[in-house]
Length: 138
Image (cartoon, rainbow, N blue to C red; front, top):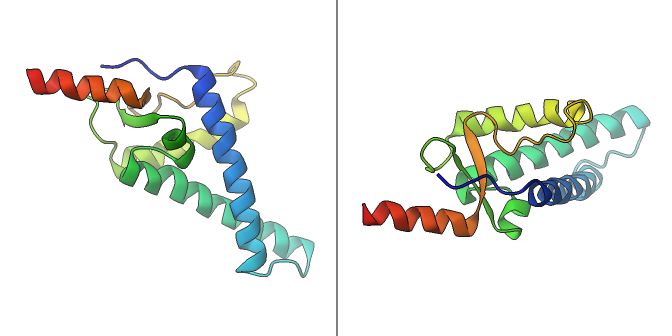
């Protein structure tokens, strides 16, 4: 099984995904839901949009494209740690939820990421191709 992608690459992807969620979530809350009448409505709509964008990016994106938008841009894939196969819905959903706990506790965990959680692993795209070639030769 290929090694996990490096922490620097994972951190860059996490920051990029976070910025994308903020930008798209804010734009969505303003343009589609017009959440600017009062602070409470604005915050509720913004948080809902951020969660929806994050869910689509991390769960749906991983199911369809084997990774979030930033992972795809930086040449990474999310696979099952055991056998390198596609991640399933429940593992991907649980990994997304665990990601929020890790983000909150990241300072206490001294920088550990959610790169390998819930039986899933983030690997480099070229390592995935090497794994596929090795499996074909067996």
